[in-house]
Image (cartoon, rainbow, N blue to C red; front, side, top):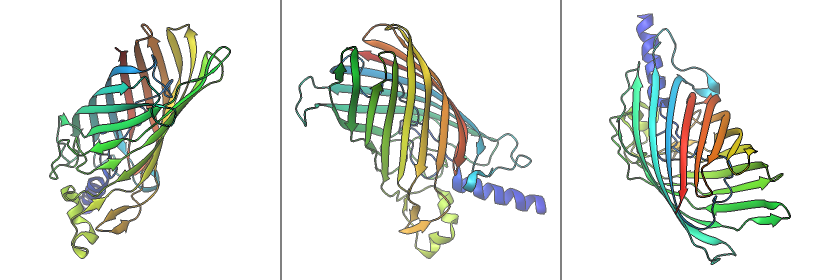
Length: 330
């Protein structure tokens, strides 16, 4: 009887908290927050590698989590109850970028960014279900790119702002706890910049703000929340959040190879709301850190590799992710 009770408590906690974190991106639900750019971008992020024009970028990412954290980072899956609990995600993103060569707005070159994700989700060792493979939510973002500030030995600083919108067109079914789509609109603008400390050594960052609209068909686990019936529950609005990517790299081989360190950080700054009522102790936080490299085939074609190992997670999965990113300028 005692064992059954422990199983029920562990399952309830997992159902209320489990999800997937994936970086750029609109790929899969992450507890309450939608999927956002956690580590998808890294080195030299403040500007395009070959100036204005049309770019195609493809991302391949694998994410695995065997640890699911609750409030204050406590493990919500007792190992004796769910010893083989795992969450896996294979993520493929197709990105299309068009940047105007003329300065048209505030001295900057305007452009448009569109990302189409395809996700394959898997979960094992728990009673939960994943909505498997499908399209995620599409990202559309108009942006302003400023030309690099130049010095005697090359660029000193370059930066950009983008007004990203996550459109809820991805595959979603409230009967599943993990879905490729989030089923709600999100506004996720950012500022990105790269500082050249020397021609070979750079620092880059990308700072996002995240605002989420309400989901009027949340997954079925919400119906078990005490406030669901009390408020006539029919809408869950994830809280607001801040997240950033950061990286430093050093050029080992001129115009060919850069290596460095990359990371990301996410923190939820307001509570998730159920029918307008704040739900405490669900705010998410995580840090990911790891090595990276950038190989340039030419000025127009570049391959990034990034690895991240997560720590200090709260109300999120805690795992590792590995990514290849190919960028080509036409």
